[in-house]
Image 1 (cartoon, rainbow over the protein chains, first blue to last red):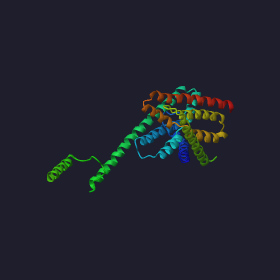
Image 2: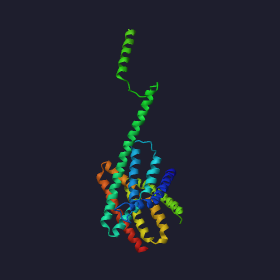
Image 3: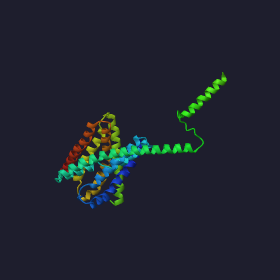
Image 4: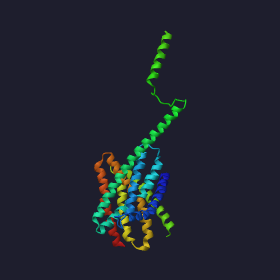
Length: 181
Length: 126
């Protein structure tokens, strides 16, 4: 419990610091793009969307059997990404737009960010599945190449016997049985 | 507070916020509410209310450090958007479409109402 709490604390520290340090450059980046307007919380929006994608990627990799320990999942998912993204600033920002009479902007922000977050979590999850499959196939190919290249062929696989081998074994058994009679 | 001091301070309060969220999620898990991610919902709505309150109750320039440490740090670490997004996706993936919509829509509606109430209360007090 104490160890898990420490992992969340460490991840949370890094996540909150990253969010704070990224806010200014992200606002500057959004301000440089055409069509953006000053005062809108682009920093929170971009942080939340990237965090949703990354959590999909992390949990997707975990669910598809990538070698991610529950400890790492806790530190990065619950700790880092949990603290990196924020719901409170998101809805207070939207409520601020509402107070300034920007009803359409507020509704677009709320629904757009939420739909984008769920969609990006899905994209991250699916991408992780594909990456884990490719990584597995790659490591299997490497194993097969190692087996084919070496003279030691016992890879521990059971049932991996060719039809030719079965035929030869059958002939040998018949031969032995014939000799025994 | 200096730039480095406030950055480390936000890290420290953000870490405490994340730890509070973790402990609350573990505690609420004992209620055995299945199908709906109630813990993150409660955490996000309470965090939205408190941040709304802080924003207007501590609005002066002299109270910037308080807003940064408690608002950006603690409440930023306490509430989460990534887990909300992932849990909504996970509900949809399991075929719990109604709960997925309820989680996303309910969080948005209750979150904005809580934030607005907090902002109004802070104006009243501040």
